[in-house]
Every structure is written in C-alpha cells, then in structure tokens.
Length: 437
Image 1: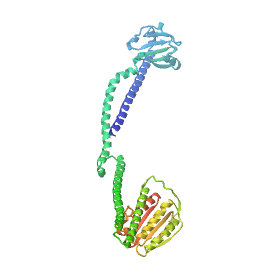
Image 2: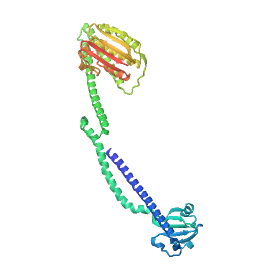
Image 3: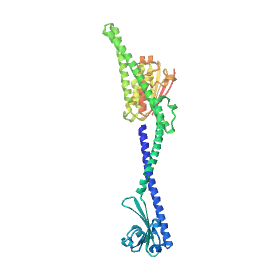
Image 4: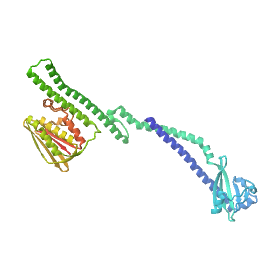
C-alpha cells in the first residue's frame, strides 16, 4: 500500500514538473517574441520619422551597425532595397505574409524558421505614406534552440524538485499509514492512536468490526459449548435407560417407566435439534422473506386454541381478546412468534396462573401482547433471555422441556419482519411482552 501511494504521488509530481517546465519555456518564448517585435516596430518608426529611409537608399546609412536587416518594397511587391542581399536578384515580395498584412492594415508581422531549426527570422513590415513598405527583420534563436539551451538547467531543477517530492511523498505516506499500522498492531487500544480527524470515522468503523468479530467468536464458542451440553443431557438419559433394558436389569414396570423417559428425552432432543436448525436458517442474512398481508388476530386465535390443552395440563388459563388487524409479514414466521411467546408464558407460569393474549391497534401500529402472572424475570436476566440456550430457571426448563431457544428464534424473526419487542417483567408479579408492528 505504501509503495503504491508513493509511486502515485511521485508520478503526479514528475508529470507536474515536466508540464511546468514546458509551459515556462512556451511562456518565455512568447514574451521574447513580443519583445523582439516591439523592438523592430520601434526601429521601423525611428527610420520613418527621422527620414533615414532616404539615407538608406543613398547608401549613406550603415544598416549593419544594428544587426538589423532592412528591406524596402514597392506597392507592387518589387524589392527596391535590401541591406543583406542584392535586391536586383530578389524575387517579388508581394506574397510575403508580413507584406500582404502591411499593405492591407498598415503593419504586419511574421516569423520564418531556417531549415536547420536553429534560428528564426522575425519580420516587421510597415506601410509608408507613399504606399511602399518598409520591412525590418532580425535573426534570433528559435524556440527549439532556446529549449535546447535551457535543457541542462531544467534537468537540474527538475531533479531537485523530484528529490523534494520524494521526501514530501515519503513523509505524507508515513503520516497517513502510521495510524493504520498502529491500529493493526493494537486493535484493543484504538483510543490512544493519534490521527487526523478525517481518519477517525475509518478507525471507529474498523474497531467496531473488530469488536463484532470478537463478540461473534465468543458467541459461537458459547453456542457450541451449550449445544454440546444440551444435547449430551438427553442422550445420556436415553443411553442409560436403554442399556438397563438391554441388559435385562428391569422388571415390567421399570420397562414402561424407562420407555416413557426415553420417549420424553428423545422428543426433547428432536425439539432442540429442530430449533437449532431453525436458528441456522434465520441466521442466513440473504434469506428472502416472503411478505404478505396477514390477520394477526386470526393467527393469535388459532395459536391460543392449539395451546389450550397444554395450558390445561399446566393448570394455566388462556384468555384471548382483541380486534382484526392486518400486518405485512410472513405468515409462517408470525405463527412461530405467537406460539413461542404463548408457550413460554404457559411454561414459566404458576399453578392456576393466567395468560392474557391480545391483538389491538395503537394509532398507526399493530400490537400483539402476551402477558402472564407467572414467576417473572429479574432485571439482571431481562437483557439475556433472548440469548441462545439462556434460561433463568434451568431446573424448571428441564422439567418443562424448554430448550432455551424459543425467544432467540422470536428475536430473529421479528428483526426480519420489521417489528420490535418490548419486555416488562417483575419477580413474583409476571411478565408482559409487546410486539409492535
């Protein structure tokens, strides 16, 4: 990562240096060209205003003293005089760009570069009062010549700037990557990492993900340990009772009693396995939940009728009331939610207890309430009852056949059906769970 960022920054620096150098040469040459034309224009004006044109024609003025080439051209393009060449042998100049422009607008300029590309000739032409054209010219270095001259100096400057870029790039990358390296080496103490404010959200996100990973790892370990323990208990009972029967160490009454225990523990084992499989299915994050409009009152009523026998066997009375309420949810999941909540209320109730199940509307919300007057849950346990295999009264759960997974399943289902759950409970008074859609 550091190498890539360094190379990227150095590439930008090198490109910037090259473009700056080229731009500087072009700008310098443009300024140089403007200055040369300004000097030629001034020279031409001096010649015209001081009547030196006649002296030039009479050969009484030394034109080579200023290293300026002077040419006089008639209005038809014929060369009348040239300070550098025999004008009698020169061809017609009427088509030269600077002459055409001067005859048209009063003055004209042009630059022509020699074949060797080392020198350029700057031409300035001005129309005189008699209709002829005075042209002055000066040879100077071309842009390529100037560029070639300054290349060594530019290379030295470029190398110096590139070296500075390397140092700055190294320091920038080091300061940028340092907090990340500190975080990688010490994830548990991210607060002590000094960094710039733009990186703080990134560090917080990484730390949160780290905490979530540790938390999930711990939950997996606890889940594995709990599964092993919970499955081992009924399997041990089944193995023990069946071994006694197999070895003929029982009478007829014991066989019936042991067979009953084997059936009860195998049923509990099967229920537990089904619950574990169900939780695994709910844990799949990309599972597509099919939503539909369902009557929560009808689902709750069916569930209550289904559990009446179970409630009677536990000396618990079931009361159901409410109104028809339509919610957008998965019907099968809603049946699981109502069944688990009602089953828990029956299972952890007292003798001759009552479970109240109701469905009603509150403003724009639909509320399912399951309330009992059972043993209740302490404040310390209320936050943990939705954890897998967590049970407030383990001895009571074993006697009633609870797996400790019912409320965990409810929690997962409600999160996938856009509903929330509110728990209120007090020891010896009872528990009320409200599911709000």
